[in-house]
Length: 158
Image 1: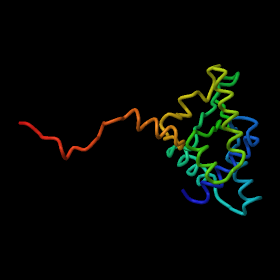
Image 2 (image 1 turned 30 degrees about the horizontal axis):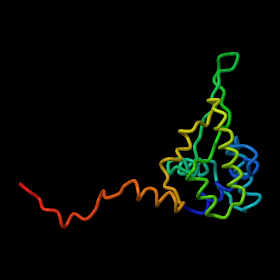
Image 3 (image 1 turned 90 degrees about the vertical axis):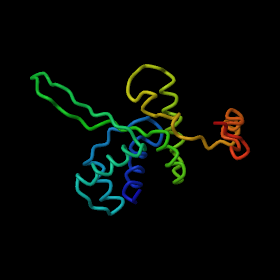
């Protein structure tokens, strides 16, 4: 992950209102403006799209495109909705972003309503990322028990 990926994650975090909402509709043009104004980084649209794609491919964020047909039958497009995954929250927390927990709490409260709108629980995929809690690690050791124990002492019969 390079510095621009981290900066874009931070911009997405702040565009979520630091925990007020669980998603953002920040456009690429606005991200470029913020990069230039606050970070003195000047990049083109293609590079920002590349960075967002990288974050999606590595499981830090999830994205839902918004494409509609207008009254004349033409296809109109709005900026995508972007939300963090559990892996993204953990990374923001490790970076020292204090509002990451507020966004996570907002997203969990929203998902508990079960209204079926985006993003749904499978977009977060919290089960695929290992837990950092010691009690979860200990419970996993208890569940596995003797699986994978010493094989050296076992005799193989033919």
